[in-house]
Amino acid sequence: MRIGIGHDTHRLAEGGSLRLGGIEIAHEYHLVGHSDADVLLHAVTDALLGAAAIGDIGELFPNTDPQNRNRDSAEMLRLAHAQVSKAGYRIANLDCIIFAERPKLSLFKRPIADRIARILELDSNQVGVKAKTGEGSGAVGRGEVIMAQCIVLLETAG
Image (cartoon, rainbow, N blue to C red):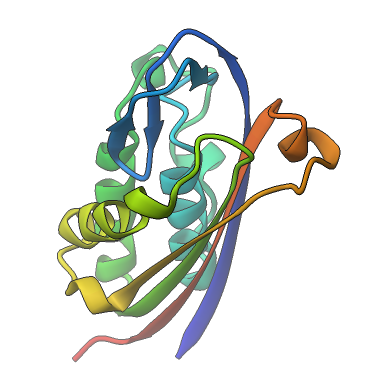
């Protein structure tokens, strides 16, 4: 068994919509980044790569490569998952946290978990998604950024 943790932060800018966990959420702000800036899928990708000890998202998909400009983070996650599988591991489960003051994410947690499960070809019960606010404190609480964390448990395939 192998455990990996992933973390990512992206700043918010005016103009929606918000792409989070592979789904579009109507919102007056969007995440800013070289790719589509899906902070949650980036954290999941890093957790998988870290657990298998095969690098990180910046090594596989550098922001200096024009091919990664506006790239779909779901595609990057699928490619990272393929590398993890090739290394001889399968996912036991993921547990994710999204840190966002707004929008309120209660209604989106299940659709996000379902989308991640589809991307990774998992059962929905293998993906947990929680949402936390910044309680008005720090960059998250001021609505300047959205952060995400993910922990993954891998087991040897076979």
